Length: 216
Image 1: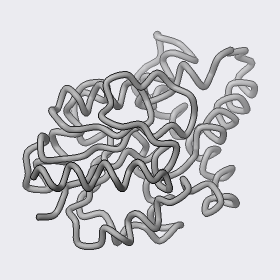
Image 2: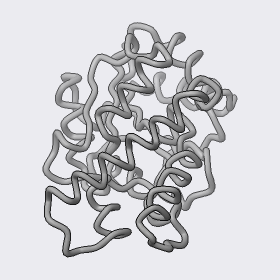
Image 3: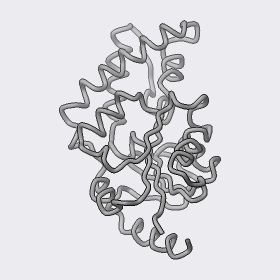
Image 4: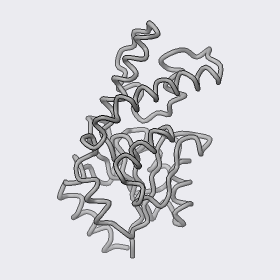
């Protein structure tokens, strides 16, 4: 019996946090905004929420979209030259080894950012289902994105293993009813996960998956 897997993108498939942080720093600097603790304040959140947090709550929807789109264009320009080098160690080998398993991607990331990673790194073939934050009404930490991904995979969330790196993502996966593997790409408070790994080369992952699959 195949195990169903659902991956977050940022921090799970690609180590993008430093690049997102730098893109926000540069973009806010251009606007004359001095914003501290960028990384912690943006981790796991959808872009429109981050724009309101960093730039202002009085923005119109059109202004929120424009700021978010401009920052993400900057992010992609910064990320593109180092894309392959920033893949989380072991993730490609893991996907290749699980060829045939139902695998989905569920991310608050912008669709163009998802496309950059999946197409630029040649990973799209492994994912049957791709869900971004614009396909659901409520972003993480609400469970909507994982409920939708499981539904599109044709299974219950309780039959899925989710890979997450942020507290908001872990909360979303837990609320959906999935088992959760915390990927510690960057330090974060990932309480409530079933397993924590540094990356996909961690031998604990293989042993834990064996135990899960024996019980299913």
